[in-house]
Image 1: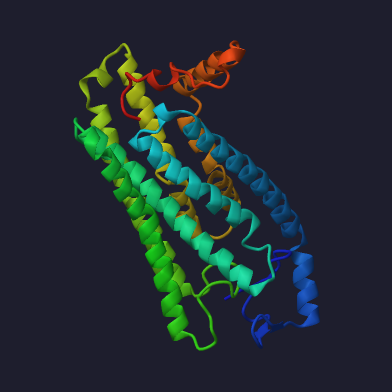
Image 2: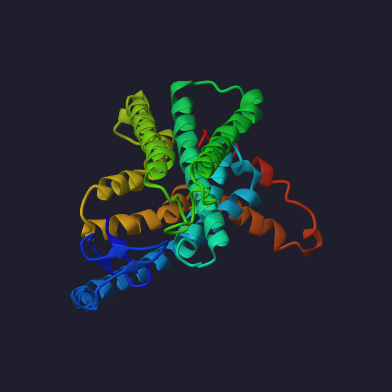
Length: 334
């Protein structure tokens, strides 16, 4: 019930303004000046954290781009979990980019509605991909055998789930809001470039996100227990396979949306330093993905192999390396 000026972060309570027409409000001048003076220090803090968030988002988006290109360069990385990661990275790249640089950056009504629709879609896709990643890892560690002939079918089903269901949710939201509203509203782009109606936000965003977060946590816990109870993992001297299991454990923790769980918790609390910390962690999701799936010896070896095959032999610059496809094939699933 508060009125927020998006340009400067100024907030008025419901007893300090009167809504008149669409996007128009009446405020007493003395009230406005008094609130401006009180919130001037807070405004500087908001600007500071806004700069920090933009920097973190830029770094995160760059890390997502580099990680996606790494998967494109090396076929050996494009296993079933690798392709799941690519779907996740693609959706997260556009979700973070549009959220940080598009949701408040346009005054064109049509463009704002399009941004809201696309933003809603890609965030739902991101959570769908997170859910698929968690489910597949759970499936890997609970079933010892995965038939390779079903990999293409699995990928198709994963894509239909993660990219198809969000499209249905967004489409239903548009259709229902168009039918209910008499002013041509599609349910996006009225207050900002996102979902307009509070009920729609709860039904088409908060509930799906909450369900995915709960499911991911359950998958994470079950998989962690499975890894921890393996006999080799309990030995005193760590073996190579133990390190692989432990790395998978950390990867699961980084991609199951822990920052979103904190985000949901923060939504029920008053704005504080905790809110800023959660926002920074949320903005750095791309960095966590980059560290989890790119910063390892396997990827480093692939890059060294690629550079070693192309640079020393100018005559073979136009041919593809024959060593690359078989590099590190004797590894466990990601």
